Image (cartoon, rainbow, N blue to C red; front, top):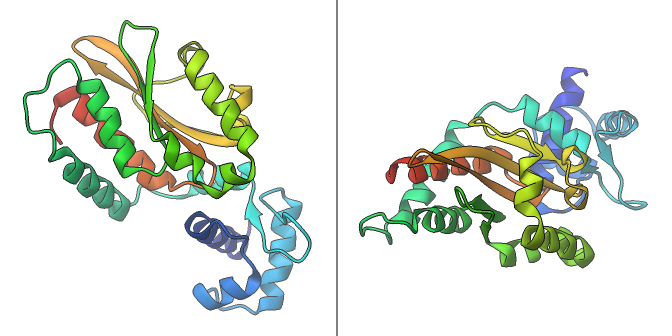
Length: 238
């Protein structure tokens, strides 16, 4: 992919993540310093669309990223120091309400804090227990993607309530934060969302912790927040 196309794709994804509105060439010209004309941007958008990285949801609309586009975005971005600082600050602020001695509710607290700092579902499996705790569903239901397609939200909730732990066991999960985008999810009902997961260890026992939401999410920030939550679970401090 040409550098100009890569810069354009990253700009489209960045803008769409922030606004949830299809991105047009005028927006790119106005907000991003790519030093090219609107006509050139439209031509490059057409090439990105041919490659399956963006799509035009309806006639006369701007473009939105596809799952393939988000995957390129995740592989291209480096861990952002700014996002790491934001996630750590937000996590520390929410942690202030938990100054009492850490106890058996530590998993719940970790998920609770994580759900407060991300605009997505935060979840964790309970070690040695066929059960998953998830919080933040109301935030996800307010996202434009789920408001426009409530049937998607219903399928996600149904899976999380009934067979989520079993399905997580089918995924390759370790201490590295893994990102499953759209159709990359082995869970059929999750093929229109993205999921970040990592393995944590508490008292010699292992569990899974993660974030789940629409593909239009702050990947770098959510990854940093998830790592903060894992550190809290394993050590009780940030």
